[in-house]
Length: 402
Image (cartoon, rainbow, N blue to C red; front, side, top):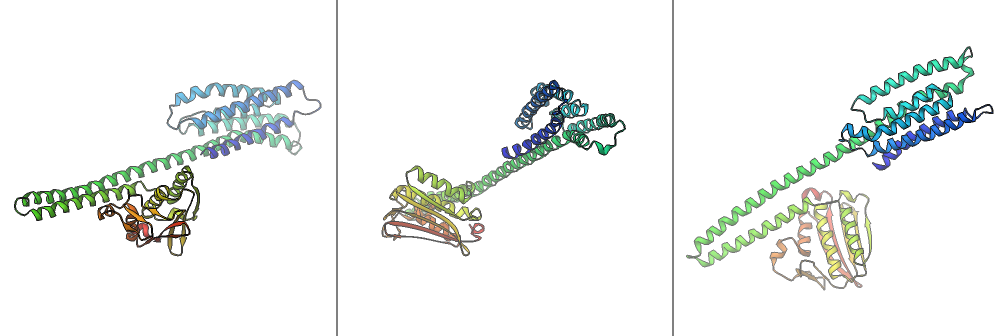
């Protein structure tokens, strides 16, 4: 948006400077009055300064700001610009130029919606009438073709207000579109939060109901069949684990960011730890299944930080045929999973270090493998020559299946 504004306002300033230079060239004649030349130059410079300040105010005005407050910030500079316009017109001996320069700051004032167009149209009509009278005075029996330069300059002066206002109108359209885009983004985020709240309600409500029934059954059986009561308590514990894993999956999907951003964050984190990182990302990586590979990227980064050699690492995400391939390589002969000792991959056997409850929670290399497998993908680990390699391969379209 900043660049768009400066392109727009810069174009308006260039047009204004060209018109002023064209009129200024008519003053540089041997018989020209030096006082008029100085008056015109000073008036033109002050007018350009006033236009620059008014443009800056116009850019910084919040769309919803009160009209009265906007006017209080711009009226003074509008008056300065109008006085400078009169001085420049006086120096050029042109009422048309003076009216044109006065019209520009007046037309870009913070008028209410729909008023600026009518003000600009009114000023354009006035300038055309003044130019008609002035050009008729210049002719005084001289053929029109004998004054082509004056005809062009008067035409430029007549078109200047409408040209500048059209550029500001274009900026208003761009800002309105940007505001609509932000509003749409906020609405989408709100809808996503509502959807997540509904999903959490359904998930937790279901599991809590099951847990309540299992605990109630265990309470009834505890005095009759202790073994059956213990089975129900274990089933309730499994339901708790499933509810936690389901809630974690929902949170992961809600917080998901594009994979290139995930890789950039991972690279920043590894670089901050003093590790030399190389990152290769396919140009189409924003279409990769972030819900599947995002947790793999985060888990791999944590493994490199906790169990890597601390010198080098390489992260890669690219298309490989019909699959998406994520590859993480670090300088380590032995790598451990980050799940507080869930998995140790020393001889790359991936043997679990704790019970299956941790795996059900979706943490560790088994959790990554399970998530990738649910998306019809494959996760492998290996190494050699002082490196540890993790590869996750997910077919295209897995985002819909995740």
